[in-house]
Structure formats: C-alpha cells, structure tokens
Image (tube, rainbow, N blue to C red; front, top):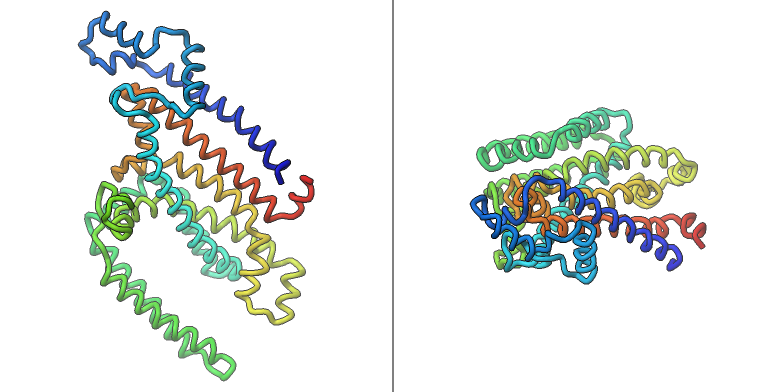
Length: 374
C-alpha cells in the first residue's frame, strides 16, 4: 500500500506549486497597489514608497514569490495588510471550520438522501417515480445556487408559514395514500405488506405533527459556532438553509449517477441468482448491488467535497457566513494579497488531499486495483 500512496503524495507537490504560482501571478494582474490600499487614496508618494519597502514590494517578482513560498512551507502564510495585527494563519483557523462544516454537512446530507433515492428509482426503473425523480433532478441541476438560496430565504425567512403549510399537505397526502394502499392490499399473502404500509402511515403522520410543532424560525444571516456555547440546535438552525442549498445539487447528481450504475448491476447474473434464491429485495440492494455500484459515487463525492469547499463563496456571502470563500473573495478587492494567497493555497491543499484519499479508498474497495499495484 505504501508503494501506492508514495507516488501519489509526490504528485501533490508540483500541483500545489503550480496553484501557488498561478495565484501569485494572477494577483499581480489585479489593478491597484497594496500600499495605496493600506494607506488610502490621499497618501503621498513618499509614504507609499516607505510602505512598499516595508512590505517588500520593491523586490523583483520572482524573489517575492520564493520568499513567500518558503515562509508558507514552514507554516507562515504572512500577515494581513489591512489588519497587521492578524496573521493569515489565524484568519484561516477561524474561517476554515465554518467552511468545512458547511461542506461536510452538505455532502453528508446529499449522500443520505441520494443513496436511498437512487436505489428506489433503480428498482422502479421506468415507473412514474423514476420519471418524476429524473425531471426533478434536471431542474435542480439547472438551478443556480444563488437563485436557490434567494428562493429559500423568501419562503423560509420572510414567509415561514408557506413551507409549514406545504409540509402539512405533503404529510397528510402521504399518510392517506399509504392508508388507501393498506386497505387495498387484500389476501393472506399481502398481510405483511398491509401492516408495513399501516405502520408507515402512522410514522409519517407522527413525524409530520412533530415537525410542525418543532418548526423553528430560520435566520437570514449569521452563524452560531459549535464552540459558542449555544448548542448544536442553534448551530443547526443557522446552518440548515446554506447546507440545504449546497447539498441539493449534489443530491440530484449523486442519485442519477448511482441509479445508472445500480441498473447495470441489477442486471448481472449474481443478482439474478440472488433473486432466484428468494433473498429479499432490500437485502439485494443494500448488500449485493450497492457496493459494486458505488465506485463512481465515491470518486464524485470526494471531488464534490473539494468543490463544495472551494465553491462556498456565493452561499457564504448571501448568508453572511465568515468562511474561507468569503474571506478569499472579499479581500481581492481590498488588495490584501497575503490573505488571498494563503486562503487559495489552503483550499488547494485540502482539495488535492481529498483526491488522494479517494484514490486510496478505491484500492480498498476494488481488489483489482490493489492487486494491480502490487
């Protein structure tokens, strides 16, 4: 396994070097002088020259890059130009947990929703449920995240009674549908199915009533950290809407990808043999079909987590969350280059490490890869 991981780790070095160099060069093209941004537009040329000397901006570009890179390798990402008392490392330590929680919770939510949905639609291929799921996924994928965020804010924050009424209607309709199917299921051989539907109707009704009773008020902006002392409930109340916006697109992508792989797996001979032996459908889906169908999902989930971490700029801005995305994007306009360079380098490092983790996970899940690398 070490022989598999070592070359991949070595490949990370040139990737991070290119990312850091590209970021450094692109920031040089941004209009404006950091010294003027630091002093203000009314600064005299002499004052600007003094600040440029203090910041090392008078040195050649190549020398400045390698000085910064050498410090970054040792863990020193520099100091903010706008707030000299704050180091970039401290700012990253404050912002990164927020972005990580957003991304991890969005990915977790998307997997918890996408996997059952994919198994259901794969088993019901070609039915109304499958077609409605496909159409809904297409709509969600084509919906820009910022527009989805604004829609959710309109309904959940400014018109909170609308989603409560919708939840009540959906819960009531689902309960009645299960009761009707339970009554229609006749014959002794269908009694277990009737009992399951009746229990499902009762549980759905109880869940709907509980959700309506516990329905919280959703904040427009702000964030309550887990370490703030307000508890996980308050943290979840603040983070639910941005997590839902980030995760809904992933749910659509993951469910359609896994559905396609599951349909191919369900037509394999070993699945047909399991069905012939009378093994329950849920066990076939969970134990026999899911694992060999999950390779593409694991790859996409690993890449998706990196994409979520790097793509929270709009969501963090809309919901007023002081995460990595907002920290990096907000300081481009102020010419606070050390923050931008350090933030991009940290995000790129997390992204490539996630890709490394996916590659290693592949070798554990698929013996053919592991044996081929030995």
